[in-house]
Length: 277
Image (cartoon, rainbow, N blue to C red; front, side):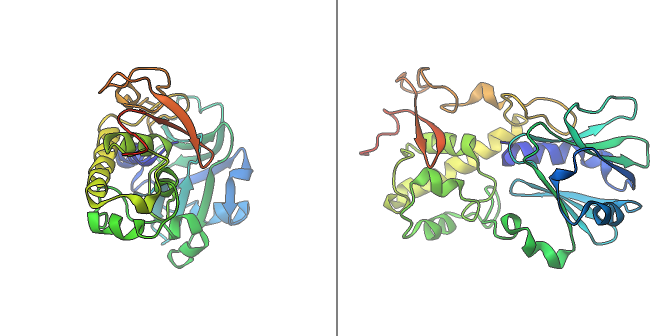
């Protein structure tokens, strides 16, 4: 958390406010979130240059600068990227503040400081291995049923763990994987290679569906997530299984259960998602 829908909403929300803005100064409050290069060089590469575009790849936010540099931000568990007006106080967990030429600020805040900020040339992307090795994204032309069939072949991983692997599909996290598995009626403990063609088709449709719904609802907010303007998402109000342990299934009224798969808390309906089906 945040996952693809949340990061997409951050990018969409702040794009019109920061594109073509020059970064005139950078305040480093908690420098441990800057992973590359060292802080002095990090500031030198960004200060005085303009943001030409802001894009997303998987869960990564990428600021494309007019000097050809890429500023790459990964929010991890609790990171926030907030466009903040000059007369507004910054988030109390602010780590890095980018001062823009119009007097406003772009603030990276992170209560647990697990996120990462890096600056690279386009030919250095391979040093950010998590970004460089991402698989196809939901909703993209590359994410076809055939793509999903091919990457599932021979995988002995449990399907929940398989879907969380960003090398397979970019942008999925705990929330949307649980939701997609529910909609496709697949138990999270199933072995990936055991899925038949019909189940793969249902899973492909479900992944695209839950990601689209998450984006449309502005993301999912339980505690930390805020969009780029500080607002909360509403998708938590429409979840089928995630965080609903002990509550009735929205389709069959069976009590939702929670288990652990690959060290991750996992919610499912034991009736809709039978392990022997």
